[in-house]
Length: 171
Image 1 (tube, helix red, strand yellow):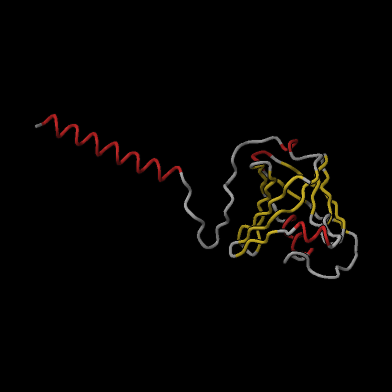
Image 2 (image 1 turned 135 degrees about the horizontal axis):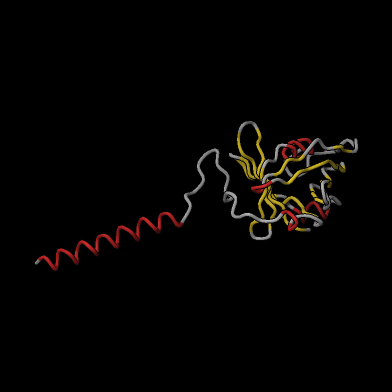
């Protein structure tokens, strides 16, 4: 009888451990105020990001996700908007429609500090893909962390005391 009780106890213990471990393996769905990109995944070298042109693929905000429709932008002649390029200690790219550049520092622990950006002064004719150029520049300036996940450059930013995530793909 004691032998059956021990087997039963071991069985229940194993089932409990499997349930606990499987619940830890998957991340819960995002709640209000959370974005759907994993936190910093590893300690990568920023040289993996530099000397490559990246185009904005999406912006994740607590209550919305803005997907860039690159096919539509290309057809309208705006395929090269919302880009970013890192080279040595300078960041540059194109908003919509202005070019920009400025200093940046990639620190330890995958931190990033993008300084004040200088831009050309062309007035935009319309808002592209649900984000103004000013919002894009503000998100870049407020970026504090970066990551490279599945070949995508992720910049973590702050907007209105909430985290916003900019997801770029290589152009």
